Amino acid sequence: MASVRQEKIASLIQREMAQIIQRESAHFGSGVMASVTVVRVSPDMGYAKVYLSLFGAKNPDELIEQANRDKGFYRKLLGDGVGKVLRKVPDLRFFLDDSLDYSEQIDELLQ
Image (cartoon, rainbow, N blue to C red):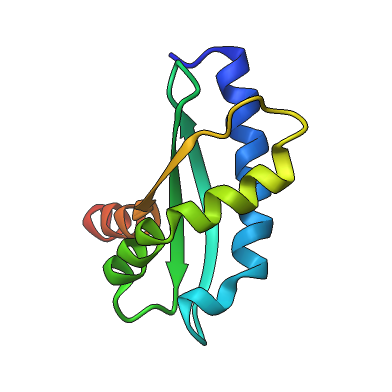
């Protein structure tokens, strides 16, 4: 179970990463809409798992791999945004959020 501090930091990182992803949307290509759905922070605040939902992407796994290769770039931009609040910017790791696909599959099975 996440502590209150972890949840606050995760919320802060989610807001900042959403703005960063929106500004840097060219990294994902044209016609792709990316959104940050969930951020989970480790108990020592050293790592953050960022879950992205990619709409209109032909190969979302490749885009996630690209984001993981560029995680230093995103971490620097995140540090510029939250550097006054956090002493240490957590190391980022990007994952594909497939919860929408999962919920559609459950709905189809229930019908």
